[in-house]
Length: 294
Image 1: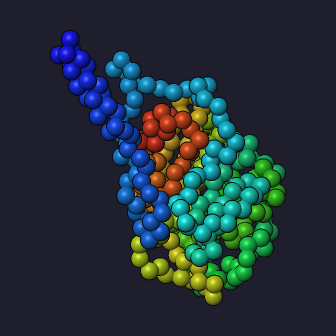
Image 2: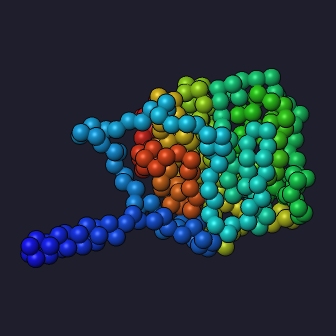
């Protein structure tokens, strides 16, 4: 009897040891001076979930779509002024004078509409404290006023179209990027919205751990790169990310800049599409194949 009791005790302790290993936690987002943060998603598998040897697929009907799904969780302690616009939400950084991120839900109906951009000019955002970035900060700077939420995504509403030209939705972009690769990705997102009915988008600047170039009297910090992540829910949920250097991408294809959402999260320190359940996040954010979007 004593021997059996002793074996039970040993077995119980073994189970406790296994349980105490726990689940790895996400890393700390509070490192302000390290935009290339340590990977917090080491607990996430890069391979798809499998059931009985088959790839597990998750249908849209298996979960509830919540309002604000596109809003990310920002890196801790970063200056952030949330601005809610007709067509997008932005987290504005009063130190860099650029948005931390801009997020919006793009539907097929938003792409085609009566709103025109003719005659609309870039405007300082009166809802933020001074000093306010204005269009003159970009004059003779060598950089374009690069939209984060593009005007082309806001034809559904004249107000949304006008607000897309607020300087809190703008970052300094190299002209060849703004009119080239970045524009190509914007058009691709609109195509996806038409094909799948809607997509959720977040984009913004990336600042490396270095001293940043500034432009204009208001000292706008010039990003070294930009990110964009896109989520679709129709049929089987999929997500994809892009990271583009703030430089000419002439001769390169958009597929050269494809990254998983996990990788974009690692670089930015943000958490995207966090309202999704953990199993869906694990499946869609650890992989990126643009063929799944064609």
